Length: 410
Image 1 (cartoon, one colour):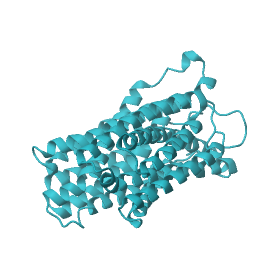
Image 2: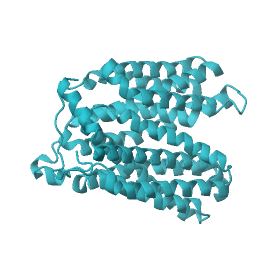
Image 3: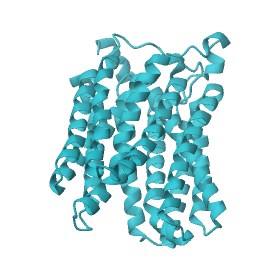
Image 4: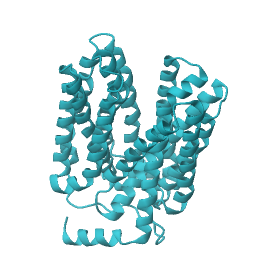
């Protein structure tokens, strides 16, 4: 970073409006991580309350992923017209409206519809939070996305502990869900004032320019996100099952693989923003992809509990490093179209999650769950072909800024 850029970054970090925007966006990431963790860790209690089987739960989870893709599309449409701050607040409000309905004992059609609504909010926040994170990062002039995603991971851990603390019962799950809804509502209302302000694309660009997107770059970064979420969903869905059923570990050991994975995700996200200037973005991506692929290969080829747990932990480097780095790089493809680019890249998230959860389940019936982890291993290794696209630009391209001073403008 040149001396002038360094001075600009220091000046930006001293701006109270920017600091407020950074805090508000961090809170949005935390609310998202907390809400999702509370939902997934409450599923056993909710399943018992609704008296449904595992296949119904699987359909609900897949439905949430599909509705989240719709939510990402909605976030793009709103951001283009009104700005990403509006899209982010709306996504949190949608989640805040759905979570209490899920918490209450309702007929199954209402229960399922609430999950669908939650999925829309989930996708809307996924996309809009990344848009806002890139906006704040650009205004600061230094890397911040790793810290934002770390807040989501830390909040997810807190959410899981919250559900554990109130016990796995329908009433306890309801308390946790209402708590998550209250936090999402509070962040949405606060964010309407403090989220980063930007000129909507419909205002900033003439009609002829609005659809000129870097489609090749969107596909490259989108496929990287897909590969990462294939691995993330594989570990999240199948690590405990593999340890317990295939490797015959005691019940209390089975969750340790996923816990180790999440611990590495958190640590690497906390370190990513500091590592990029030191290591270089492209080199960091190459290292993260290689290490994570190696972790999946270890799981696939060494059928021992200790090796599997180590392999799951090492795989966490992919979600820890590659997600924030990829969204940051995507935001630089065409700064004037940053929100549109990020919304499209985010769609690959849900495709990867579905592939990881479903494909490994299918493969488990053939070669077994262990060898099935070759799929995420190969997907992560393929990221190495995209490394050249992560080279840092020689100098930053200015984004479209809000002409109104203060209040978190870019």
